[in-house]
Length: 62
Image 1 (cartoon, rainbow, N blue to C red):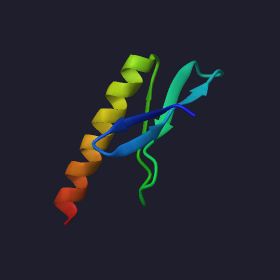
Image 2: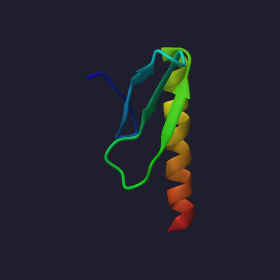
Image 3: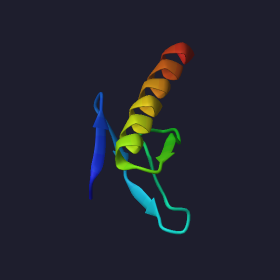
Image 4: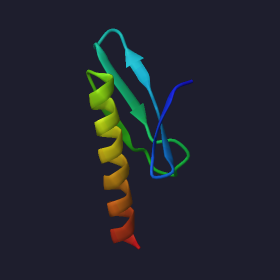
């Protein structure tokens, strides 16, 4: 299975043929953090943004 990686976090890569989109979620965390895009390059950007946003939100919650 292909995965995205950023700052020690892994994310899935899923496809929706019906909707013609790629999507995924950050794996192995206790929250649901998802992302989607129409190209693999954009999916990677959205994954990185989702991880960075998650880390910023988590830092604010501490």
